[in-house]
Image 1: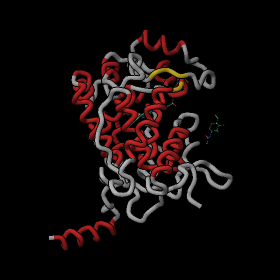
Image 2: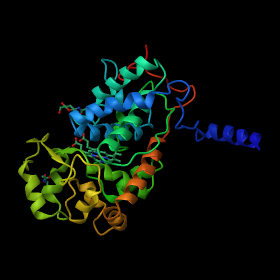
Image 3: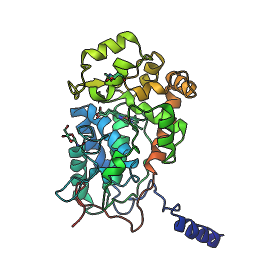
Image 4: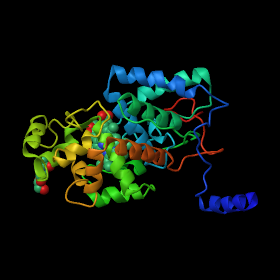
Length: 318
Ligand code: HEM
Ligand SMILES: *[C@@H]1O[C@H](CO)[C@@H](O)[C@H](O)[C@H]1NC(C)=O
Ligand SMILES: *[C@@H]1O[C@H](CO)[C@@H](O)[C@H](O)[C@H]1NC(C)=O
């Protein structure tokens, strides 16, 4: 039986789909304190600035959707290398890199050269959601860090754009093995954090599936003229932008989604009923969200002897 498994795995390895497994106890021998070392650093960053919890969650998402959860988003540009940080979905938008560096240097003091930056992103995302009042889950570990990053991958539609239609959203998630249910549950991340005028302007000026008074309010801090006030911020959840709850879904039902893509999930479409379920049952949302975060964290990790454990999250080891 064991032989059959090994042979099946070898065959699958050749087709690239038998990756070594991540596990919740990956560092139990090599860095048993990793979770307790990371948690207070995340806690202090999030209590200093609540939005940081949202920013850390988003970093993990943007990492995983481009060539898997491999820490590639953390690689800084150099004179001879352009990474993912200036790609359209990240440019002037992805944040929290300093917090990841703080966590990494704290972890390096305890277990040098052992814990990957990709795993730190996954842990920080989990801890952030928990601190802001959301669910917690057992985070799987054992990812290794990439030696490269992909500007074109990050720029090329693998990370969904806010102009996406429902079918675009479904297909970008399907492309990384996530279901429609995962997509709707993970979108509940927009119950925390902020978006820039440049991202929500078309929805608040040009769409008709939006509450008129909400649109007027948001227009107030986002001039219609393209290029003017582009970086002005508004909360993704108008009710409780620093609490991880199910208000995001309630907003969609009252046509107060901030992004075009948000409102696509409840617009007389197939996902309406799931949005309604999550709006009424926070526990169902929390458990589906946790399950989907674990699935997202499992997207094509580097394991075994692939990749490396970076010393500094922003740079490939010399
Ligand atoms: C469903 C497709 C999605 C689209 C189209 C989308 C798009 C966006 C956009 C445009 C912003 C604002 C960025 C800015 O203005 O600088 C944003 C923010 C955010 N997104 Fe998403 N997103 C999606 C899914 C997700 C998922 C799956 C997660 C997490 C698992 C997530 C987490 C966040 C968070 C937490 C913020 C706020 C970040 C902050 O305040 O720093 N999003 N998203
Ligand atoms: C990133 O944003 C800056 C400032 O808005 C802009 O000058 C630059 O061209 C952008 N980079 C890319 C690759 O789009
Ligand atoms: C609204 O749509 C029109 C026509 O497509 C376009 O010219 C205009 O720039 C859009 N306005 C905003 C604020 O997106």
